[in-house]
Length: 217
Ligand code: UTP
Image (cartoon, rainbow, N blue to C red; front, top):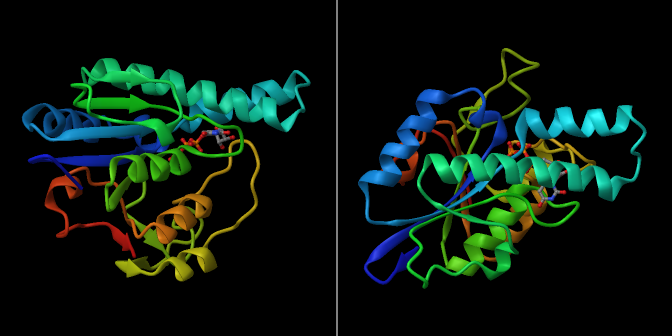
């Protein structure tokens, strides 16, 4: 997490968060603007991606790679808007190549490769930067033992290991797939000893390890 004397935070900013939590977005801006630390923020596609993928399908686009590409373009549009909002630098390249040694303090990016998600991109970004914690900000408080949208009695899980996350996650991959945290990204984090905080509370970024969300380690 250390980069010279400052910290570098890697954040997977879920599209679901983007379109539903304007206060949270404003709080993120406050945190980013008030600190000297560096931030790498990978922005998801959310409703825009799903609507566009469905639109593509409805007009006859059936090629899976092309539908993923429509998702990627949606994440990039969201990332571009957020880069302007946060006064950051928009980055369109491979997250495996992200470096912050060029004076960039706030780098904002979207998706990159068909079949990945922005969670996967942020896992690779964390490796590039050498971050040991990845913050996944979404609409949900954290990880639950079942989908809280479907089950009102779903139980919040404060701390879990990667194996438990895989048990709780459907592994089917398709354009517009929806995960609390993508298991493909989790595998990358597990292999590289990167902890994942899943939260809707942006203050968890600066309060870590005292978080209100879940931690996967
Ligand atoms: P995401 O899945 O990353 O957006 O991308 P999201 O659902 O808003 O993100 P989270 O889960 O809330 O963080 C939307 C779709 O874009 C394609 C996939 O089809 C994905 O389902 N995509 C995205 C890619 O193919 N490659 C990428 O690198 C990113």
